[in-house]
Length: 314
Image (cartoon, rainbow, N blue to C red; front, side, top):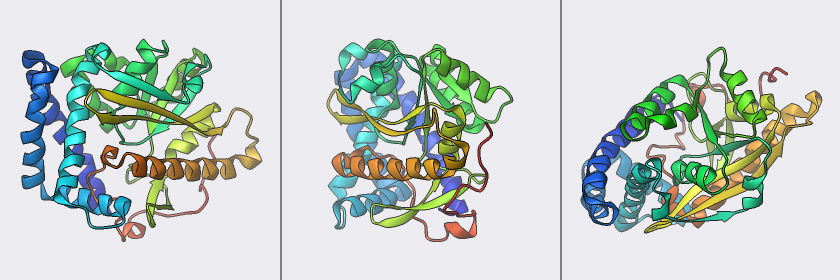
């Protein structure tokens, strides 16, 4: 993943989400979900025809999933799925989970009263997972984010549900880990996304959909620092009004000895990549990283290592 790719994901995807959310917010609140969903087709078609970088990235990704060149209609379905989740985000943030059918995989972990770390990806809908936690399992779900991303997401949340901004914990602040630890001790779920990285991140190459891709170690270090069970999370979009909230065990850092922490971090990341690849194959239109995730020259911009270069503090 090269520097230009990082600049691309940091600028364009969030900006596109904000524009799309503003459009969807107006349509959704004035027309209702069934009618406003019709607008998703011309929106998806616009992105297909006039945003070549997203079209090209979607084609590259889908070709890896399918093992053949992706058809244009498949790229359209990928973009339409993204638009659908953004559209539904309005209703989920408005507390209208009654409009959706949400099923669970491994719900028994979700129902546990113990605080836990959730590590996910830009896959499906995080709002479906957060809504399920609040309304079905009565669990609060907070997200740890880098400050620049926290500001962007808070701006989006302010458009729909300002109270949801309280569930965002910016990383890098003096009290970030303390806030996360307090919420975990209260039985909350604290989530992070591990399929994008920033210039300061240490990256590690992992085989993903048949080719090496650079994944950040940071989220797994943070999970080790917080010393809690860790689960993969995803709110997969299944079409129409259906979502599947998926959980899978990644690690348990509760009692990991200091000497074994590095190995446990790497094992958790390997398991994460394995599950992410499996879900991409099961639900290929749900992964929304519309940039070149497999860029060849990432090693020129970031240190790559097979082991963490610094052990998390106790």
